[in-house]
Structures are given as structure tokens and as C-alpha cells.
Image (cartoon, rainbow, N blue to C red; front, side, top):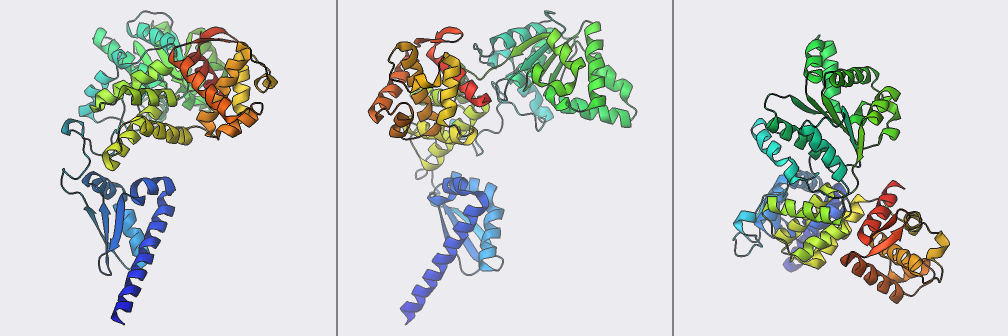
Length: 479
């Protein structure tokens, strides 16, 4: 009888622990729950008013305390219908039993709080005063990874920092994460280093707007105008933020005109090109067109590889070249996504002791692409490939074997596998009812073409396969 009572208690506790887990899963979402609680963490009741959360490692325990202590306490109390105290423990309290990295490489989670190197800045929170000098040193032209996707912008902005007077206004545009903010802040650092008595001002369009509104209400308009119109180099980020703000746009227009008349220069940045900024009005956009306009595109393979190596150097993290190349080849987005992939790779290695090898990198690539890119369909890939290579859609599904058709078809299959994760047979069925072995062969063929920088023919002439891939992927993002 006593044994039966014990069994009832165990069963009840087990069910309530399962209830805690299910409620946690619903509150933080299945992906985060699976990462932090599914296998690496054990829960058990401690009496009627306590819950023990046991993590596999000390590092994981500290992370759970920081991120989830209040939530776990709230969920446990809700399940028990009373206030529950939560205690976090680590199964591996000693360094011998916990997976660790060398001391110089060990970081507290979150692993990377900010990425001032290569396209990775965030200006949501201004840096603390004591960190400002460090950030300025890191955001320079030496830390910017140059490539064909950003070379014209880099050249123009560097000339402005050197006071080359190439034009009164330089306009940079491109998607988020391609290096616009990095270039603006690098120009400020370079200008101040070269021209001790010169005045360079970097700010966002939001800061310009806020300052203007405060100046109007506080009767500080003369000092506001002196601050922004009396500089030698004005660097304004996120210009698209000014859309619809009539009074601010008028002030901004006069600021540009005054600056140009005094021989100063302005470098502006936006996530859209001049033609798409019609909400700013023709007076402003015409000034963009009269200056030098430089588009920054998504970084190509060698730039992505350089970004990853810069981030690894900053974190004192050594990764096999095969892992770096897998990340760079698989993630064709900007520096923020590359930084996120590096973070996830390191978490899985340090917390769950997964080896830093290609299979782990491929898994991270798949997860990042799934999270950061919109769903892509076979039709989207077919249209993008046909646009870049100048083909009719029916050609990709035809039996033609000429190089002008076979290479785009193989690339379409390769992209379908990368972006849809569909089965080989599904891809083969879509592209002309080909067998799964044909699709696998096409995938390997594209990998070889990418590896040896083979050239293919597109609508704009011959280019390397990697460049063709980048153009197709750009077409997919703008579709």
C-alpha cells in the first residue's frame, strides 16, 4: 500500500514537471525551448514549494539564470498554484566535467554583444563614453572588408574623409547589413585623424529629427543650425527615416545647400535608392541624383569569408578553414547574419560540446537561412535564374544539354536544394522530371564550378559562377 502511494506521488510529480515544460515551450517557442531545455536541462520538484533546474554545464546554468529565472519561477508557480522558489544547479560543477574552451577564448553568454567590425554595427543604444574611443578605432577603413560589392562606395567615402572634394554629396544605398554605417563612422574617424581642426559630424536621421524638434520647442534653432551646417563633413545615416516629415525635410534641404555653398561635403546612407525615396520630395532626391550615388550589394563569398575571419579574430576564436568556408558559402546575407551564425556555432560547441566540424556548420547554415530568409518556392528560383541568364522558363525543364542551358539548370537545382531543402526527387520532378541522381550530380557539379571560379555567361556578359549565384540570390531577395 505504501509502495502504491509512492508511485502515485512520482506519477503526479512527473506529470506536473511535464506541464511545466509544456508551458515553458509555449511561452518561449519550440526553437528556443529545444535549444535550452529539451535535452541539456533537467527539472525536478524540491518539496511542495521548490523547483530545481539542473543544467549540464556551469556555463548553461549561468545563462539560464540570466535569461529565464523569472519566467521559470512564474511558470512553476502557475502550475503549483502557489509561490514556488527556483534553484538553478549545474550537473558539471568542475571544469573537468564541463565542455570548455581555452581560458582566453571563453566568453560569457551572450557571446557577442556588438559587432563594430565590418557591417555589424547597431546604433540602437549609444556606446558608453569610456567605450567611444575603442569603437571609433575599430570602425575604420582597415577593418572594412573590401570587395566588388562595396568597392565604389568605399572609394568615394574614403575620398571624402581625405577631403578629396569629389562631389558635394555622396549617397550610399543598399540593404541592411552591407556596411553603410561602418563606412560613415570610419569616415568620421579617418577625417578626425587627418584633420585635427576640421569638423566631422556623424548622426542618424532620427537624431537629426529629434534635435530639430527639440530646438524648435526649446528656442535653440540657431545652435542646432550652427552644429549641423557649420561642419566640414556631415555623415547622416538612415535618410529614409525623414520620409513624411515636412518641416524636418525643409530644414534638411537648407542644411545641404548651406553645407555645399561653404565647400563642405555630405555623405548620406539609406536602405533604398534615390528612385524609391519619392516620399522625401523631388527637392531632396534631385540633390541625391546630382551627387555621386553608390550602391552596396550583398557581400560576395570572399567578403563574407573576410567578415567571419575578422569576427573570429575579435573573439579569439579559432575555427577550421573548412568550417569558415561552409558558413561563408552557405549564408549569402550580410554581416549580422554571419555574426549570428558564428554565435550559434559557438553556443552549440561550448554548451553542448558539439565538435567544430563541417556537419555542425551545415546545420547552423540551414537554421540561419530558415530564420532570416523568406520562404522561397521553385517558381521563384526558376524566374530569378531565367532573368539572370536570359532564358525562357521552359528551357530549364527541357531536354536541351547545351552549356548555355545546362549550367543555369544545374544552378537552379543547387539553389532549390539550398533554399527549400526539398528532397532530391522533388527537385528533379520540377525541373523536367529528372531522377534524384541527376539532381545530386548537378549539385556536385555546381560545387566544383564554384570551387574553381569557373566562368558562366549571363545577360550582362561572362562572370564567375560565384558572381552569378550572388546575382540570382539578389533577384530572389527583391522578388
